[in-house]
Image 1: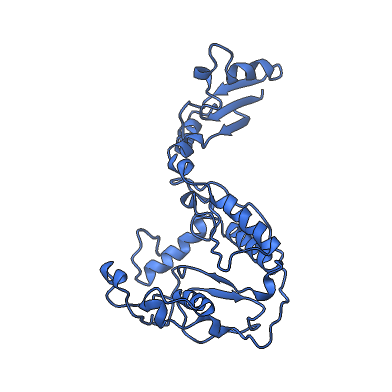
Image 2: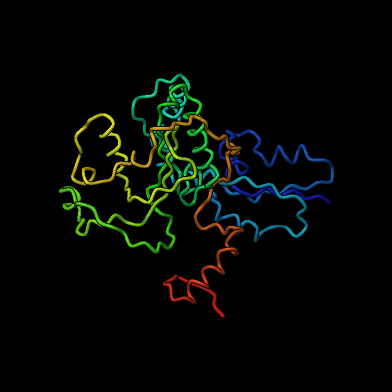
Length: 300
């Protein structure tokens, strides 16, 4: 005999919200074919972590499981819903201005970081799906390289961190602005190297510059282009990113990349085991074998 079991939260356990009318389980029992059974194990207010306890009570003859969960997990982090949602209209405005060739002289575009800790942002940080970050990047790239203003444009794609990977090059130093010194900067170290791509008709193809640039090199290029004074000693001393360009032989051709638009992935909720955990455990064990401090590792 088929036996249908409802798991989860108040989507199914909704008796408290029906004002005396039939709840989900009552309606379900009236609709299933003759001979079928229906059992309610869902509990109003349950969260993802509670599903395991509901499964402990699963009838032995259960044949069909239906799960609805996650709403209360989201409510527990309602601050995400209260944050500003300006990124979407701002991006749409950027895309429209790019298509019309009316972008400002300097535009700054960044992905949506809201919900990063739950894997629903549009960047490359954990726990986000990096495919969403790359789809966003391609959207900006296509908008800029197909814009009427493209022949006179420089698109700089850079990251604010290096990803945690080993870098054999010792960080250099730069002058320390007074505000940085007040914030605790004592050595002026630039930090580890980070990726940076310069896309432009003036960019040399398949070229890697060996000059030392830092993030303020972008400021230096802007200041050089429009005759502006430096903001601090840091950008005043930085190498001009324009030194990586060649203004003598512009080439407006731009490659097109087939990047799936997504969206990809889904909610990554704390405390919920993931099927990829097994892929990372060997790496954790290897790190422990080489003496790296890790919280736990299985070694042999």
